[in-house]
Image (cartoon, rainbow, N blue to C red; front, side, top):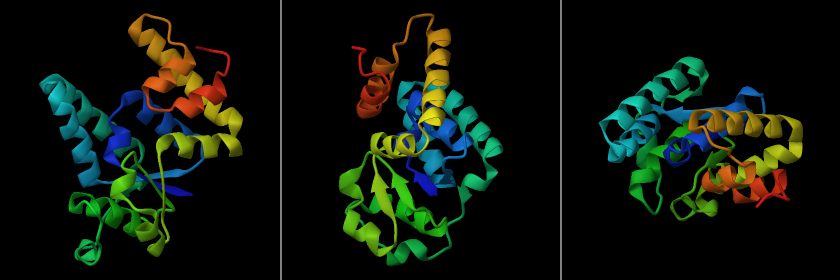
Amino acid sequence: MKALLDACVLYPTVLREILIGVAAAGLYRPLWSGRILEEWARATAKLGPVAETLARGEVERLRADWPQGAVVVPEGLARRLWLPDPNDIHVLAAAIAGQADVIVTFNAADFPRGLLAEEGIARQDPDAFLLDLHQRAPAAVEAVCENVRRRAEHLSGEGQPLRALLKRARLPRLGKRLAPAAA
């Protein structure tokens, strides 16, 4: 399965690390375009120049680690497409060019399921996407989430309960599934 990752799911570090971690576990092939990666880097600018510099380093690491993730959109493809937000047409164009099965995004309103279905593409928010992957390969998803939790704990110097960490990463249903007794 191939999934195009929208910039909005690459920007939060914990979410990105989980999505890329489950891809590294072989559960799907991640896709993006250069424009999507640039949007991610620019989105961090609001946190200051250091954050943008760090994000650009992460972008380069992602490109180096996943060269097969880069999608080149043929010129003219976007001109035949329509979405409610014209600024998101490049995302759909990249999904089509990469032959993605799904676009993983938080922007449901900007990617109507009917329009995507015409192109043979589904849309899922990251929580639903990861829940589906967990159903197929629970041990792999759980291991990735635990590794990310341990890294977050190490970097913060504080305890990071899994359910709370996943909730902050906008993965509340996955957090509930993986840590049902936690608060």
